Every structure is written in C-alpha cells, then in structure tokens.
Amino acid sequence: MNALLEAQGLSLRFGRVRALDDVAIAIWPGEVLAVVGESGSGKSTLLRVLSGQQRPEAGIIRFDGTDIHEAGEAALRRLSRTDWGFVHQNPRDGLRMAISAGGNIGERLMSNGARHYGDIRAQAKDWLARVEIDPARIDELPRNFSGGMQQRLQIARTLVTRPRLVFMDEPTGGLDVSVQAKLLDMLRALARDLSLAIIIVTHDIAAARLLAHRIVVMRHGQVVEEGLTDRVLDDPQHPYTQLLVSSVLAA
Ligand SMILES: Nc1ncnc2c1ncn2[C@@H]1O[C@H](COP(=O)(O)OP(=O)(O)OP(=O)(O)O)[C@@H](O)[C@H]1O
Image (cartoon, rainbow, N blue to C red):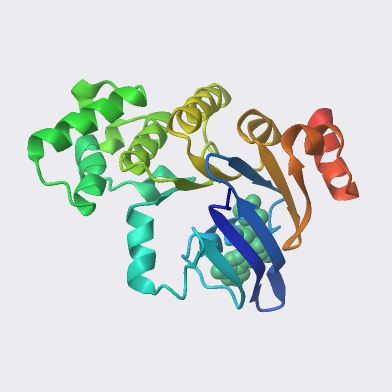
C-alpha cells in the first residue's frame, strides 16, 4: 500500500525562526496521525504546508503520488474541495456564520457539483443528525449554536463530500472538557466508519492517545520522535517526548 500523503525535506523559516526544519512525514489511507509538541514547535505550520495553504522553502509533498505544487493551483484547489478537508480550531474560520447550518453543509456539496435542492437538503439533514444536531435546526444560523455544536457543524460541512484526508488543527481546543470528550468520541467513530485518514495537531496527549494510530512529536521545527501511539506514549525514547509525557502524567 502506498502512502496517501508523503512529504520529505520540508523547511520553512520565518525570519530567524525555523518553523520547519527538514521534516519528513507520511500518512496512510484510513490512518489517524497525531502531531504533538509544545507551543511554537511548528505543528500548525506543518499542517498549513501539508495542506497546500503555505508553500515550503524546500521539500516535496505528494498526494496519491502526485507532487501537489507541480500539479498547479487549480489542481490544489480541487483537492481542497474534494479529497481533502480542513477542520479549524475556531469554527468561525471553517464556517460561514451568515448562512444557515444547512447552507453551510450544502455549499460544500454544491462546490462539488450537486445541484438538486431536495437532495442537498436531505444530505444536510442527514449530516446534522450524524453529528448530533437536531435536523429541525437546519435553517438556523450557526451563531445560535454552542461552541461544541458549531464545531460539530464544521465537521459535518467538511465530511459531507467524503474527503479521504482531513487536516485538523486543535479541533477540541477552546471547548469545555466534557464537550471535548464528546467531540473526540464522535471523531473516533467517524474516522472508523468512513475510513478517514486524519492528521490532527493537538496539545492534548490524552486526545492523541484516544484517536491516533501513530504519533509524531515535534520540537523546534523538527520531528524528534514518531511511532505507534502506545509505543510513543508508554515507552518514549527521546528526552523531549519523555518530558512531554511525564508533564501530562504529573498534571
Ligand atoms: N506567519 C508567521 N510569521 C512569523 N512567524 C511565524 C508565522 N507562523 C508561525 N511562526 C513562527 O513559527 C514557529 C512555529 O509556529 P507554529 O504556529 O507552527 O507552532 P505550533 O506548534 O503550531 O504552536 P501552537 O501550538 O502555539 O499553535 C513559531 O516560532 C511561530 O512564532
């Protein structure tokens, strides 16, 4: 089996800061990969670069074997609408707050060519139910929803077109602990049921443990350790991972 997304030699500086320093990473179909590390270690930059939102100074990124930058801007935009999804930490960055919940889901379907109003509305209702939002609220604006509901709506909007790979940047950040737990359970079930590949950036080691098959640990723009989740968390090899894991256990 070939990697779904594969990157090598990724480097990017901001002034004197090396946000990415020769990073290599691969994700396989249906795999959940967590990227962990302290604030400023380069996690969000890596996600932006892997998803084509920011160009690296050096390195290559292949999706399904094709260099995403060589394929051109139009191909990259098409990937973002079809095979890829992006879930932002702040749902406001991933939703359109001035259109209804159903409109948010339907818009992504329409950008993929759906035209039949009845079908679009039926799919929107179906997805609202899947993310445990009452379908009767389909015509409400997202601003009427709680933070957890907005995040679930963003997930519905992203997944309705069945992407194969979803980039998630701290999707549970900023939510209450009980809301986070519910969202994580939902993400785990969706990833399994839809065979989604997910690259999730998180500060939260417990979330990584729950969701991820594999973990990549970043520090100062470099990958310092990677491996199967249980191995990395139960038997960390790099001193920085040991510190990261022990600071969570002590908290
Ligand atoms: N647009 C930018 N301009 C200047 N510096 C940036 C920019 N984006 C990121 N950086 C710097 O690059 C480094 C990596 O930042 P990044 O946001 O990727 O880290 P992170 O691990 O995601 O942190 P956090 O967990 O706090 O989001 C940091 O030193 C940051 O200040």
